[in-house]
Image (cartoon, rainbow, N blue to C red; front, side):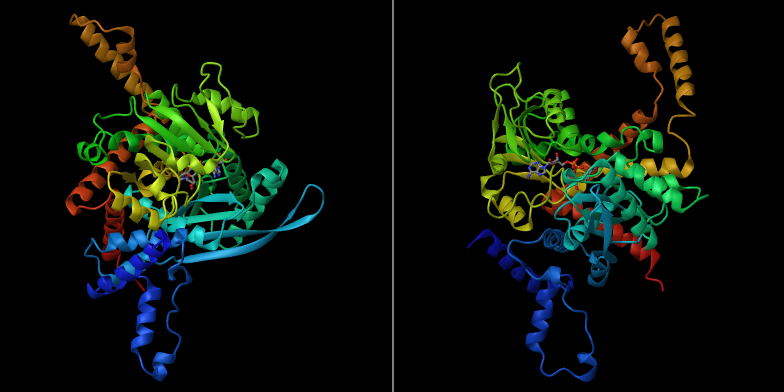
Length: 535
Ligand code: NAD
């Protein structure tokens, strides 16, 4: 049986058992079909429009990104006691819009573009989620990504609902001026539909977008809302000089690094995957995607003594098992070569080479594989190739539902799931948004006070005959600036979240992914139970 058909079989197997347990969250298409076969002629009231089965629930081969997210949801839901109706409420996407808008190209021609925004859950506001510029953005993808945002925020206790949006473009085909027009018009379209604002819905960077786009979004929103006090909080991931926060650009990659480091310190994870020593030092890494998330993850891993043996980009894999890849050298090369790894060499390492077949990345032997590009890269047909002991999902949805089942069945592989691994992007966005709401930079009022406190402490120590080195004195005296606050908050949040997930996984004897979903779902269910279902 192919892996995709085994996923369908699994979905079908799951449905009756879940229904028997009273869970209404078995794939709706399956329960709907079952209902059709057991009924005779419908009565008048039954003939009235019932909820049609959602198209995304039809088991497809291979599963779509949205099906994978819903599959993980369903699997985790069976490990909780949350009431089935409430599960349906949590799972449903509140709203999703698709719109078309024109772009005047630099040559005077007009092109019609397609944009999306999905708001998965408004149980807390604002909703939050990135804007993706990619040629294959679609309705299902933004719904899947928005759902993941809801679960991610709940997991790391960020008080936002989940959202996601995007525009179907390959940004490499557009000039900076054209990208500015796309971004401003997209913002206008969101604004016209009441889908943006610091208390409503707050975009952020995602695949294909960065601080520049966020800056255009903020400016457009400000122009449309003169006198609005909190325009800076309408979007996060802005440049520091335009209402952003120090540390946002590196936040997601830093969080991935913290997640890997924390998991590599857990004795039961090390035992599960057959690693004999803890820590990053000396472990081998493979990273797919060298954009924002991939680059920063690689940088922190390298600085902590990890050996990066392969980095995959869209046109090839840079490979150096002997010496490991130099991250600054590769970054310089990509910046000077329009993002291409072609002809990468490093004078310090004659063993580095470029492999043109990008599909081989999943099969490269390593301790930790970090997919940091796009979804569904590990799927039913290549999951058996994976030779990593740990997969850290820096990208959203890199492992499909059928691949996840195969990897779990194989055993000896731990997957740090996306909703945990890449959650520090939204955590940092939360800090940026809070800064925008208060108008006050973190550390502004406390840094000098902390420094004078530290100086006083050094004086007391020295007057009692305890002499400190220059470095020790600096450490005691340094007051925390904005970036220090941000990093400390991210580290603390990620370590706590990882440890909670590991504990749940142990208690329920389930995967880290199931445990992360369980924690998220219980947190959202708790919110709904307290808030009620008004009106
Ligand atoms: P990015 O656009 O900065 O980088 C993506 C990189 O992947 C690019 O360098 C691109 O060339 C490369 N790439 C594309 N196709 C590839 C392929 N087939 N093989 C190898 N490399 C390929 O995007 P990003 O912001 O780094 O986002 C990457 C992933 O991380 C996405 O799944 C995104 O949803 C997720 N994510 C991003 C953030 C964030 O803060 N930016 C936060 C959470 C999750």
